[in-house]
Image (cartoon, rainbow, N blue to C red):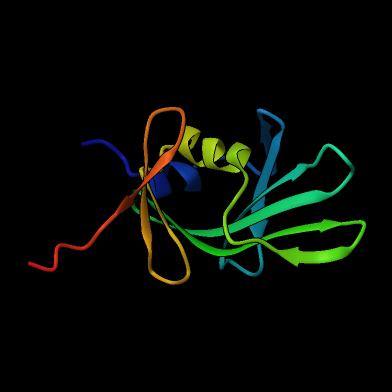
Length: 114
């Protein structure tokens, strides 16, 4: 029986770094965070909860010269990190779901209304 992405994530030692992205436990057992340095010195952060093969996004933001700025989507480097960790789906706070496809990109998963 294969393990889910969230089960594999629980077995890792933190903090860890790969492909220029750092990861670590954040906010009292609530979830995980991906952080990376931007080209102009800003810091990109993606906070998520791991549920099976899904990464449920809690917050995406950039902290830079102009202060903290919430973003609507994670940067591609963080999407690739989630892919590398074994996640197959990203769920945005609005409930919109995206399938993590092979490089590059993601594809929206639409609910079947029929």
